[in-house]
Length: 564
Image (cartoon, rainbow, N blue to C red):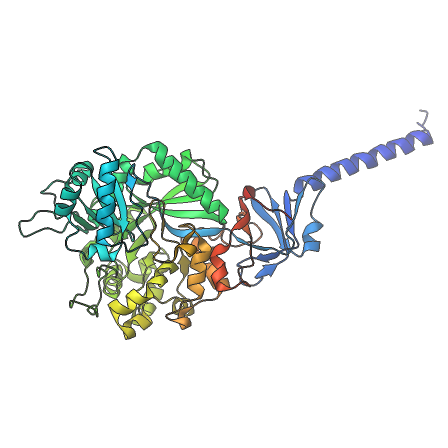
């Protein structure tokens, strides 16, 4: 058989074709493995303990591909990679607001009252004007402070005379109480012989008649009813406004306490096509021993449900937080528990039955002590140490309770906006007690996980601070300012890096999500914010002016006003 001989020119061309094919395959493979985005020449705060800062980050799909120097990250790019030059700007993990309330605005005439503490004369004057200028039946709504609630004449009887044809609700800015008239009672279905709900109070006169006030769960039920009465279109509008504000500040997750219907709140967020992650937690308005339905299965990428919240006591503004010693001002009062220790045990067991994370609003040290007793009675550290029970607020987690807190594995979720109430705490608790109340730095030193939330509300302002700092209920840099600059107890202030970590990685830990988000590490979700200022370098008073220039969620840009 004659041996086949190949023409030299054919061999060369074949070899060249093979080289070209190899290069095409290699280029395609490189392109497929290359990042979609590289962010270079920046200051990347990773919130990761061993490598806290980097210069650049590469993102592929929804996750972080690499973190390193600008040179290292640039080498990973392909011609199809989008390159973003940060020009030295600060990048942080996406903020995770661990404590927020979605309270849609009811259809109402909203009184434009001055500041957080309007006078009774001002409120009466504005109600009278609203009655004249609005059709009968229009809800008149206003936000009031402690001075109004301390005014004995501010009650149902007086409001009935001022507004016989308009329902009126005056809601306390901190969310735990209201004053209202008879027409409002009729609007929300409160009868004259209405029983106090579990955990709540309708104050009454000597004849047992409701005087037009609600406290704790009696008031939370009003919130739930008003949400039911708020048109879905208005709820959707409020949700979109909240989500837009969140993205503007670099907030990529909001953990929402759904007063009212958990499933309805989740449905509104899904309909709003939330660009950020929303965790909806159940704020039950039923009795502790009433079985709760399980949460719906997640059916949206960014909206998911989970967690049971209970409010175990009140707050120091109305002296309803339960203390082991009496309040130092006024009557020898020690506050009160919304639920007894035995009811707390029922709440704990229900969370085990549901296999749901438990969140409890606790403020007073007596409340925390009795809740820990209930945890010990239902299994102690052997049952609870890995379940990450959350103490929301926990101002009364005093030094003698800290070791038990650590053994039980609880997480503290604090709202630094409460620090603006320092003068009130001093008045309520006295100098010695105020000095050890609402610890922040001490908890970190003791190894207690600490997460941060804004305690913001969609509907009404609740921050007792200057309007110049408010700007938005969800502004995380206001909370960072307050957490790192406590004027009443400077020794409890934490560093800005610690505050950002509490607002990102620790908040993710507080929802069992720290393996997926909360820090800028390889393999984690690409949730991040490029900030308008270096919050680690600017003055404290400039912190609340910070915004995001570019916000990413799962590697997708959801907010962008980044320019050179």
